[in-house]
Structures are given as structure tokens and as C-alpha cells.
Amino acid sequence: MDERKNTIRDLENKNAADNEARNKVFEGLGESLFKRIGDTELFPALNDPGPNTPGVILADYRRLQKEIDESVELIKSLEADIVRLKELEDEISSAEEELSRIEKELTEVYVRLGKIILASDRMDEFCESFKQQEQALIVKIGEHEKKLAELEGKEGNILTWIGKNAQMAVTKAFLSKNRSDLERIYLGIGENAFSGAPSVIAEDASSWKSTEDAQKTAALKEHLSSVSVKLAMLKGERRQMGGLFEADISPARRIQGLEKRISFVREEFPAVYGRMGLYAAEGEGKEVLSPFIKEEDGEVFEAASQIKTKMAERALEIDKIKTAIKIDEEKAEIENAGKSIARERQKISAAEAAIADLEKQIGEAEARIKVMEEFLSKN
Image (cartoon, rainbow, N blue to C red; front, side, top):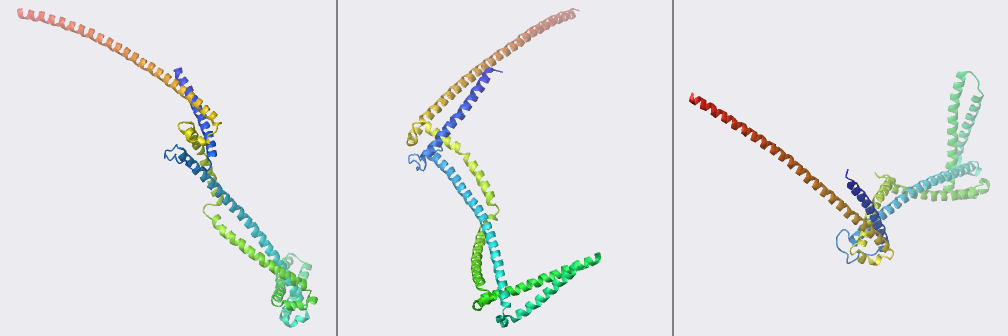
């Protein structure tokens, strides 16, 4: 293989590497210029719509930067929504637990208050029917407890054991229901007494020991109301945010999409930096961008110029080598054509000799024919 072609390949590779290095130089210069330009308005004298004028390049840069900034802000908003929803879930869970605790504590106070009222002689007229229900349930509870004790002490074979367990299950169920019914009576009396007749409770506080319970109940009810309002507000806010999180694309998926878009947009910046750097280094760029060019940029311009000179020298060397190769190819073609002509001429000479021989043979044959014709004419 022609070594000159290897030389061309080496020179082209060096130029490609230098061109990449030169682009990096321009990218660095362009990025620095964009930072210095900052929010400066587009230059009035640079309204040329060409793609590589500072105004257009700056507009492209700001468009890309704006898209990134908007995407970043949207990501922050979506992340805040995710955090807020988590906070809401935690706050709602905490409020529900607090509400449950208050209701349980309030129930205990009401039950205790109901027991005190039913145990008071002064309230017989007020709760006579409830006392009857209380006594009936207490009797039933006692009977169930007695029956359970009897069943637990009962012994026998496997059939007896099965029957005993079945009876115990039924008895426990009745016992649990009667106890719940009794507690509901106490609860209802205590709640109604506190809500409907707090003055009556206060009149007999010494015997019912209700002063502390009454104060505690008022505080619990106030706290319950406050927590209920807060819980309703939290759930309302969660419902409003629910639409966002129930959309076809969740915030997490939207964030992933935005992050990918940001990465894609950032890949466009080097080309924009390079366009601005190239404009600043060549033609009228230094003059137009003079307010933003610093003394240290001279080294950048010098480095870019040196690289360009080397690339131009290599390009010229490549053209010279290619021209020399082309000349040699033309010479080789001429030589091949000459050889072809010589070969064709040799063929022509051989054909002419063959023709002359054939003509001689014809002449000799004609002479023989003539002699034979003369013989025939005489005889």
C-alpha cells in the first residue's frame, strides 16, 4: 500500500484531534462570555437574523437555560408536593390517633360519670329506667360468669369436652354483649348528663366526685373539636392533592421525565458555547464583544490561532500529497495507455504481414489458373 496514504491518514487524525481541542477552547471561551454577559440585553447593532450572530446565539443560550430553570423549578414543586403529601399522611395518621385517644378517654369519663349517676339516690327519678336495665344486665352478667366457671370445672370425655367448648363460646359471646350493653348505658347517661344537665352534676359534685371529671370532659370535648377541625382540613388538603397523584403520570414519573429532559438540553450547551467562542475569535467578534473580552482571553485566542495554523499546514500537506498521488496515478494511466497502444500496434503489424502472405498466395493461385486455362484453349 502507498505509504503516502498512511501519511494522509495520520495527518487527518491529527487534524481531527486538533479540531476537537480547538472546539473545546471555543466552548470554554463561549461559556465564560455567557457568564460575563449575564442579563445584558441583546445588542442593538446585532439584529442580523443569521444563526451565528451574538444576539441569536445569546437567545439560543437563554432559551436553553430558561427551559432548564423552569424544569428545575417544576421538579422542586413536584418534590415539595410529594413531601407535603407524606407530611399530610403522617399528620392525618397522628390526628386520627389523637382523635381515637381523646374519644377513648372521653368515653371512659362518660362511663365513669354514668356509673356515679346511677349509683346516686338523688338521681333515681332521672334514671329509674336505666337502673332497671343496669340491674338486669348485672344479673345476666353474673349468671354468665357463674356458668363459665361451672363449664371450666366440668370434666368428661371428648364429646363432653366438645360440648363444653361450644357452650363456653356461646356464653362468652353473651357475656361480652351484656358487658358492652352495660357500658353503653353508662356512656349514654354520662354523655347526656354532661351535655344536657351540667348544673345538676355540679350541685352534687361532692358525692359524685364529678368536678374533676367535668373539667376534664370539657377540656377533652374542646380538644376533640379542635382535632376534628384540624383533621377535616388535612383531609381536605389531601383530597385536593389527590388529583395530582392520581393523574396518568405520577409526580415521580414526571420528575424522571424532567430530569431526562434537563440532561438532553445540557448536551446542547457545548455547541452554543462553541458558536459564541468561535464568533469572538474570528471576524468582527472581538470588536463586537469587546466589553466582555478580558486580557486573559488573549491566550485563548492565541491557542486557537496556533491550532488553526497547524491544521491549515496539515491540510496543505494533505493536499500536496494527494496531488502528488494523483500525478503518479495520471502518469501510471499514461504508461498503461502507451503499453496498450504498443500491444495494438504489434497486432496491426502481424495482421498486415498475414494480409501480405494471403495476397501472395492469391497471386500465385491466379498464375496457376492462367496457365491451366491456356492449356485448355490450345487443346
